[in-house]
Amino acid sequence: SRTAAVIPAAGRGVRLGPGAPKALRALNGTPMLIHAVRAMAASRAVSLVVVVAPADGAAEVKTLLADHSLPERTDFLVVPGGDTRQESVRAGLDALPPGIDTVLVHDAARPLVPVDTVDAVVEAVRAGAPAVVPALPLADTVKEVEPAAEKGLPEPVVATPVRARLRAVQTPQGFDLATLVRAHDTVALRGEGATDDAGMVEQLGLPVVVVPGHEEAFKVTRPLDLVLAEAVLARRRA
Ligand code: CTP
Ligand code: MG
Image (cartoon, rainbow, N blue to C red; front, side, top):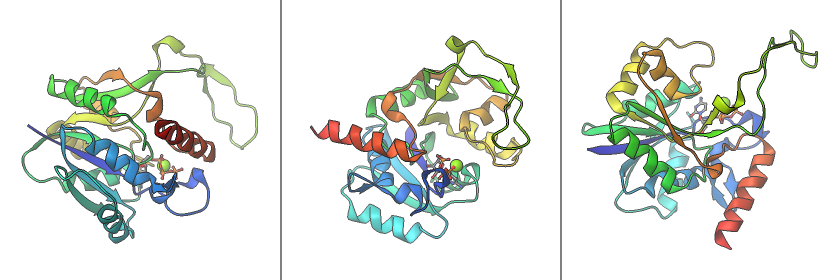
């Protein structure tokens, strides 16, 4: 049984502010994408990593991979991404060679996920779950609102789900490859597309299970997240 990791890295990073595409920004001197690639290749289970690059950035990403030290037992492929995360994941799945039966989908924007979390996801898929997501309990209470027509207006609260039953999901999410491909073939694309691959498998009516995530698998989304990521890296090196 062979496992591949697909890394969607084709986003602009609008919420991070102006600059290079998010995955190419440096964290303590090394591009975020390289940290994410190393996090996947650190797992003995992962034999192939497919990087889904910004549409006009595939050549630059190939150069980056060639210029950084990566494990020799791992193969690497680079393909151009699409306009939505879902399209980018699809491009990565389409590039997989025959013989892969398990796939991880991991955001380049989660560069610091520990290898134990990656291994736990792979193990749960190999144990028979068609879809596995790492997740953590929430610190904040969550409210569902009726979104305001205009930014800044008060929004009526619709519901308050019981916090103890909620989980914030991370990546890598792990799948039986045939199941994830079927989800992409049959689940309709709407608007921004799916932000969560496991959600597409849920729409097929198949079981999705949660395993413990990790604080360090947080997503770099806004400027403050860069500060946190660099602090985590500095602590690891200390
Ligand atoms: N992604 C992608 N292709 C897209 C959009 C997103 O491969 N068309 C990837 C991003 O590169 C990132 C992951 O999906 O690794 C999670 O998306 P997100 O954190 O939203 O990143 P961006 O879309 O780049 O950020 P923003 O939404 O702030 O623009
Ligand atoms: Mg986005």
